[in-house]
Image: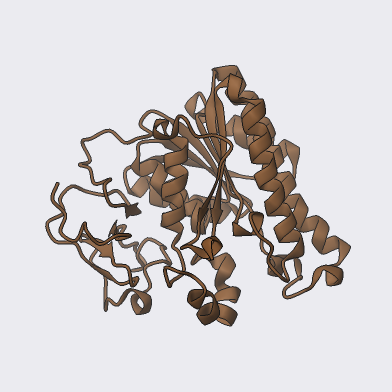
Length: 334
């Protein structure tokens, strides 16, 4: 398929989801008219994001894209099989941001999805978007810090679809959600520290625990954990967040070694500064500073993380395990 502009390194193609009854674009906050350079969006048009972050119509592109980002080299007709056709996936923290983008990307590539989130209404909204795009999804509520809830998430996915091929452990919180915004290491309260570790580290471990047991019984699977650039480097004023994310990378590497013989691959994705609800305060306070320090000169989008997650869960990544991939616009390369 000939796509004009394919020589623009880093360009990405988008088809906008159908507008909802309320008139918004399927709840996708990434399509912000001010940032995109467009006055309005046409849901029937495929767009390309240029290196400067501007969206423009991609002339000459054919074939429907069922929601989300279409990366260079991955154009396909709807009649072609997706890279996850026939597989099932569990996405935690799937009600917003990266989790929602991942659910839509999983669906685009043919997977059936169980969307889990503490915010049950948000999970249902994601399921609505997936189903409206032609995919198949169910919503599951629950708290990733509670073992019984996590077991129910996994069991719910298996009950609905018969097996669990892929898991994206994405649920997490930021320092401002535990009243620790801007605090140095000695300033964190014990309650704030414990809550951060409970959600961002113990929650990932609990999900892995029950997912692995299921995948062992069925002969294999793929797990992706959301870590962060904070799991690769130190960041001031994010003590427990950094500790938890380093822990996620450690869990990922250890489990990859332990369960390779069971044909279970375990990897981590390490997002940089991404345009999500969780980073809203950071973007408000330090947007210019962060962009200036990012080689690609912009914040990332949830869909760009989702593309890495989908690839890691697919057979195209069959020789990849124990890795922690930075998707950060070059931040950690500095």
